[in-house]
Image (cartoon, rainbow, N blue to C red):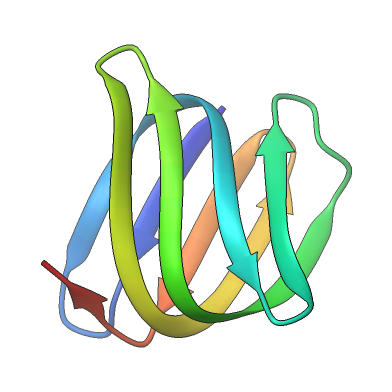
Length: 81
C-alpha cells in the first residue's frame, strides 16, 4: 500500500509499505494492505512503518489519517526529527 506523511510545510515520507501503526486518540491501531476505508484523529506519538527498507518511525504532534483503496494519507500537525 502507498503511504504519505505530510505536514503543512513539507512532505515527510512517501512510499510503499506493508504495514503502518498509528497513535489513535483511543489507542494504537495498525493498517495493513486492503484495510477497510477509515478516517481517524491521531494524537502525539510515533507512526511505525514496515517497508522494503525495514522498520522506520516518525514522531508526530497529532493529526488525521485517511485510509482508502490501499492509499494512506497522514496530515500531521508536525513531525519531530
